[in-house]
Length: 260
Image (cartoon, rainbow, N blue to C red; front, side, top):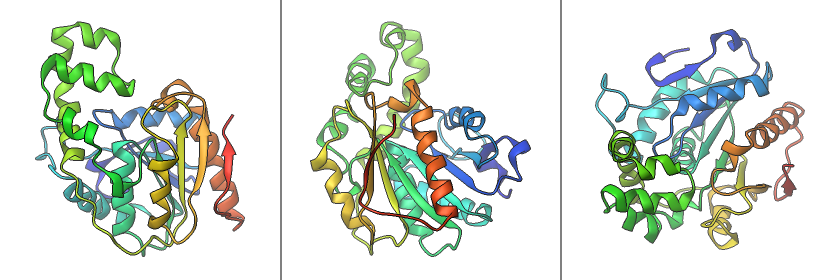
């Protein structure tokens, strides 16, 4: 696979018939997605997209969603040598969407799977804009609303100092995002969310309809914003169904399904 600086994966699955490129949430470690390889087995190779940022000092960080997506698209364009799927959660879904726009004509791009993310035209939300200006414990407590910050981080000054800069940098990325209308994608778009996610509902998902020529299908899992951490089998089960159906050429749009 080209441009190895951008990707992490298990090389033992390099012969898999498809690839799933995964984009992490704000402050998330993209390599955590590699745990999905065991669940997907040999159906597809899981590829974690690892852009420059606070955790890496070998390259300068990219400071806007547009620049990040453009650079990721260049890296992915030659790595997609077989049926390829983009999966992103929260911020990762927004970046994956912008990557899909840039690679819309790539013959091996099969599907965008956006998890835990309101329609791009609604972003950034007022909450994210406000949080991006906070610092220290105030920032940590505000981020805790999304459910991805352990209590021990909230309580420990040293842990906050160590972990929060990466989260804060990613929140600033979203806060400065500027949506630009463009032609709808010709590939299928799938939306997956936790039922108890406090900032996702029909009103935040409906505008996704404008981003694809087909009605995006919606899928629900038990849990909140980070449903995929508690039960990774839910998104993996969904991905496996896409791999199967797309391989058979039996894609359908506008359906609503249960994951578990």
